[in-house]
Image (cartoon, rainbow, N blue to C red; front, side, top):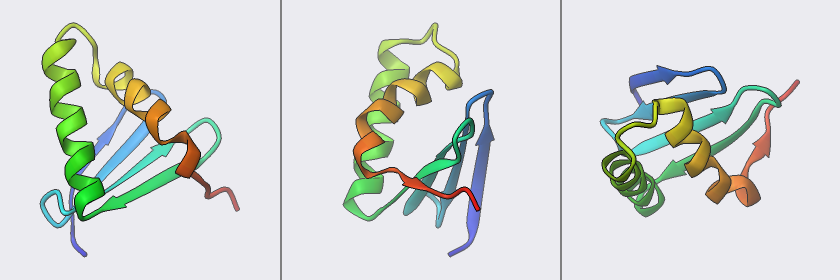
Length: 80
């Protein structure tokens, strides 16, 4: 799947694939990541939009940090 967008913040890397068909969110301090596709990717995108609209004073790092807390239970360790 072709990568279409990448957003790097102090603590996160967010990659979008297939024009939003899938997302990979990586927490950089411990190299844990969540890969979301299909309905999960759509839910993630909706969460991102809702939170960005609700908290316009937050930067992308803060928004991703809040969303990250919702996905901790399915995050995987990618450290080699």
